[in-house]
Image (tube, rainbow, N blue to C red):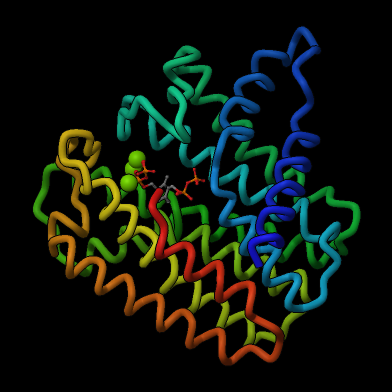
Length: 286
Ligand code: IPE
Ligand code: IPE
Ligand code: MG
Ligand code: MG
Ligand code: MG
């Protein structure tokens, strides 16, 4: 299991590296350099790993699933670049390095995010091993889960409620959008690539919803663990830990993990890799 993760992360990194050319062309070199700075830094690669773990369960060749998995990582990375900007969370560190707008002008970071978002859809629409139907299904999934009903909608709630009191239902809607959106897309991607029946895709999406909310609950717990460095506290973010406290937040995350794992039992294929990844995502330290 550990070997699979290590080896697959290498394949993901190699594919990402190949997708963004090394900056040599005079006109594009600054854009490619900044895209590589963010994309090739030390991310956990959880979303592409989820795509590839589902695909493996349905016996999809890894070569076929790698490009879609990397397209999803590009959208995730764009969301992080924009999330860190001064007009949003105004953060200084990302993936252990200065945020992109610390290294380049703010407009450059903004455009780098735009480029990764746009390029992700080009990668999906031109992936040579996919049928036109698969390309369209993936584009539909990614645009839905990263849009108003997914990541962008969740980020809107996040920023609207900065410094405001929040109720659990709204906080949950925020987590559902900003974080569970792309995690649902990852699991749906695997199902689409595996030509899975509708009922399997539904179970994958329900699992992704529970897992994604749990993942953000743990993100809130980890941020609040050192109050002096807490970005959320400095910005008076509406978070699960501020609303419920650490223990209740962790309990909720573990309950959601259990319900995500239950959904996997409905699938006819092998889910051992997925179960392991789900568990790691909730029992993590960064
Ligand atoms: C960070 O996601 C943003 C959230 C949705 C909580 P990850 O924790 O997966 O970030 P990377 O990709 O490993 O940097
Ligand atoms: C980020 O949520 C979710 C997205 C980028 C869409 P956070 O703002 O809590 O993520 P971190 O803590 O900066 O990684
Ligand atoms: Mg944020
Ligand atoms: Mg943030
Ligand atoms: Mg956070």
